Length: 151
Image (cartoon, rainbow, N blue to C red; front, side):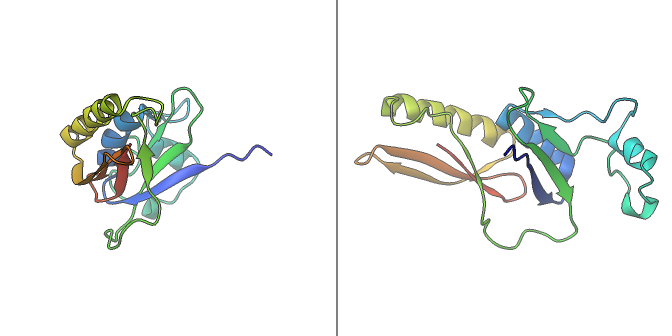
């Protein structure tokens, strides 16, 4: 069975999330369908009522895609309510390479990505460093407070 899925992230500012997550995941902003200058124009061509398209909706990309076609599409859906509780689902970015990579090298790789995502707007929550077990990871928040890890 070939199961395809899209990951949908509720947020306040889809364009900010696209700008943050596209480079963090090596994704690209999803262009509108062929023949349409914007997603808004595409949605209007489908007959989406104007009241369902608030100002700015679809004028810029609100989704990102894996340019290799392997990963899922990620849509950042604007919602009126703010995030209020801890995520029950989060992403792990895995630049470290796993336990087969020497620990010092894994730490370097993880810290390099952490530096990039912090420069792009992430906030470090905590560093999970356990030399005895060899574990090293950094827990962060994206620009809207969603948790993710770099391992």
